[in-house]
Image 1 (cartoon, rainbow, N blue to C red):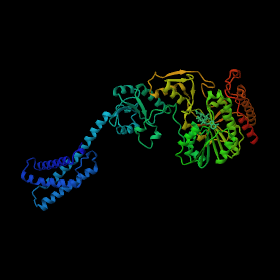
Image 2 (cartoon, protein in one colour):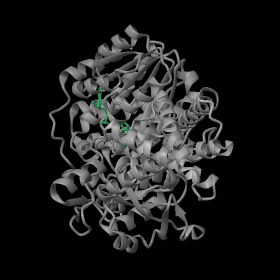
Image 3 (cartoon, rainbow, N blue to C red):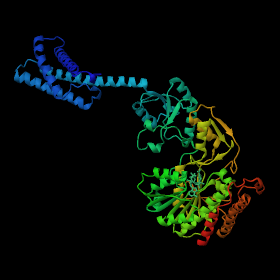
Image 4 (tube, protein in one colour):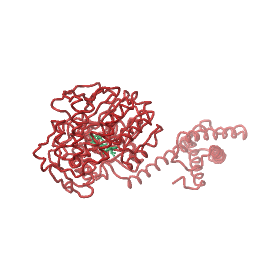
Length: 630
Ligand SMILES: NC(=O)c1ccc[n+]([C@@H]2O[C@H](COP(=O)([O-])OP(=O)(O)OC[C@H]3O[C@@H](n4cnc5c(N)ncnc54)[C@H](O)[C@@H]3O)[C@@H](O)[C@H]2O)c1
């Protein structure tokens, strides 16, 4: 390459160009007759000498022509003008030889400028072309899905990242055979397998940032059939402030294929209720609690008190939130420990509580009735009482769709929680709860479980082919919880609109597709419904009216509720039955409180016997002491 040549080679090349330009100018001026060769040969050395001196003045003997640009072109022009001026001065005024025609000066200057500029441009183009050629031989080839703005941005970026696009596919008939950046639309998305057969790309890149979940599902199905690795650009929201880069390309995630498009919210209204206040999150280290903490920190609370009984997950939360400048306190504490909770609330002057601490696993809680009652019912009750005594102003309980017509004991405890929040007499503390279905990817949920099964056993266990669930992403659910917090009134049970339920079997199949494992290599096994598990979850009871709220995706329920004195009386019985520890009597009392509980008393003789000993004496003491105190 020229830049690697010795300077004398560049010098020689430019000298030859100057001599050639002068000769051609002479020929042109005299209609190719070449008169007075002696005069020409006498003049030429002076011309060449002055031109070379002018070139040296503008440092034009380097060979880095691949970077030639406007400033180099200007330098060439300046050097040529300086050389011509010097030649004219020396010729006419110093040597006093006025023998050359004036037009020769102009012609020679123009040809020299063209030759010196042209060689630079040509060599730049030639270097770039040969580099591109070399790169394209090692670059990975890509078929791009989409021929819109996203694809145009991606095509510009690909060569810089060692990729070369070989074809585009798009469903828009207007774009058939159109070329973007020289790459042609070779077919429709449905025809992708044929395009792949023709071009043999190393990868497929989906460049439709505005694709709906339905479109994404269809595209990934086709991509999966080709057997080629596929990736996608991030969504529109992530691209608003910048171009698509290959680093941003990521594997298609399950969230991209959810049955509906993620909810976007305006959370300004939340800000004024969080900013400058002391907020506590219980269950802060859990899936929902930790996302709550992350989102709350962005609303500038005065202090965030993170409470969880699980030490290591709380440690990870501390690490994950360490960047925020907001004051944070991480308390390892059990919410059923009244003294400890009172100490935390008083010490930090907590104003608002988001209560996400609970036991949530349906089959597990079927065998741990007393613990479920202790944590999800009496833990809640005691925390609300202490919060009220400590002058907290807001209390929000996270509930679940499993609380609706529950078939599980865990669901019943969540329903009792809702009843407590809704029926409790209004004091100074605003209490409300938010009910929603499954969140994608939470700890112990179906997706991480399926992913692990695909990885380790190449087998997925689904309990029933028809089982469906409502799904949301964790950030989406938490944003809605915060919005519900902003609009809710005391005693409200607010329900998040989760779109259509998703069939777990479809979700399992999609996960297999996204895993990149060839179809047919992962077996799906049906294991039968587990204890307490329902085929379909519901978001509302039959008797509940769903009322719209100021927020589009949040409904307020209106329905029969138990009176507070009656509920308290039942809770006392439940407390006593929990202490006694006879499973069917605990269930029977729970059914008294939640008549919709789908449990037949006759089952209970073989009902899941409690695996734990009767409730601990310490807990009995705790409750008794608490009652005496409160
Ligand atoms: N995950 C879902 O799909 C989903 C859907 C709807 C509602 N919910 C509800 O949201 C809440 C949180 O769910 P999650 O998915 O984040 O669960 P999770 O298990 O990830 O988190 C719960 C956290 O609470 C903590 N905790 C439990 N008991 C505690 C106690 N006595 N004292 C202190 N900390 C305690 C646990 O250590 C855990 O960190 C639950 O009430 C659940 O019913 C969850």
